Length: 188
Image 1 (cartoon, rainbow, N blue to C red):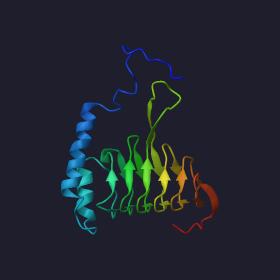
Image 2 (cartoon, rainbow, N blue to C red):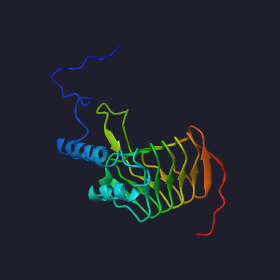
Image 3 (cartoon, rainbow, N blue to C red):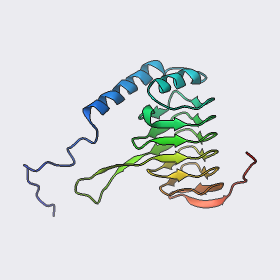
Image 4 (cartoon, rainbow, N blue to C red):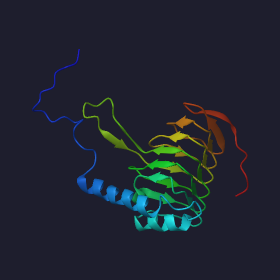
């Protein structure tokens, strides 16, 4: 049976995870992206990168950011050179996301940088950084969960899900993602 809850006790499930200032900042960001970027043709990467940088994103040179992607907080995004954030990608990054040079997020990838502590009565909001090192490829519709480090050159196969760190120059697939094979390490 469900336990009763004293109506006078503050309910952690009713408390917001973010301040009003933070919510307003993100609202301004979402409106800006929708008005200035969402409708733009795919090749207008430089324009979208300019807008991201105006909102505090640290973006390397020669990046490709598609108009249909969703970036929760650009001020918590850091990319190296020659990074692709493909169509439909969603970057939920309250704990920050760092994308190393030559990393690729294929279409509809989801980087989820936060969760809740379901073992706590407070249902505490927990945010963790996600790090993709250089030459990482996250394939279409794959999901990377909070706190994961995708080491240099690893591949996460299409529609795979990882909550664990991925070793360098290895290929992973499935839900949960399992090691499949080594990836040839090319000269870099």
